[in-house]
Image (cartoon, rainbow, N blue to C red; front, side, top):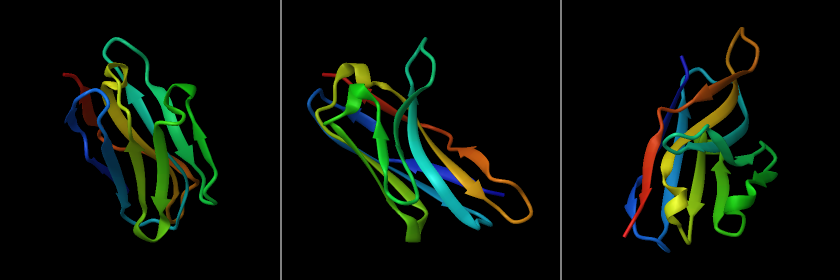
Amino acid sequence: QVQLVESGGGLVQPGGSLRLSCTASGRILRINDMGWYRQAPGKERELVSTITSGGNTNDADSVKGRFTISRDSAKNTVYLQMNSLKAEDTAVYYCSAKIRVPFRLEGTYWGQGTQVNVSS
């Protein structure tokens, strides 16, 4: 069984910063791509940032220059540093990872989500 556990969400004022973390645990052979997605009320889930096992990143246009994704492969952890936050960044943020486990093909796993509220 694989679990992804996120932390670091909360309430922040516009212009502020937050750092999200997500750690994968369980019987893991290999973690390939990791990423962050978000879903605002009444909207579809959207990609925020992804990072490959080699460190290549891809960011949504709406967060470029403000958010930075990184990972610590030794800790099975991905981070999202969010700076210059705006009200429109308010959403539930989900961690995702493509993981190989014993005797199975690679699968996509999701965390439970962490709420980020940007408000004055």
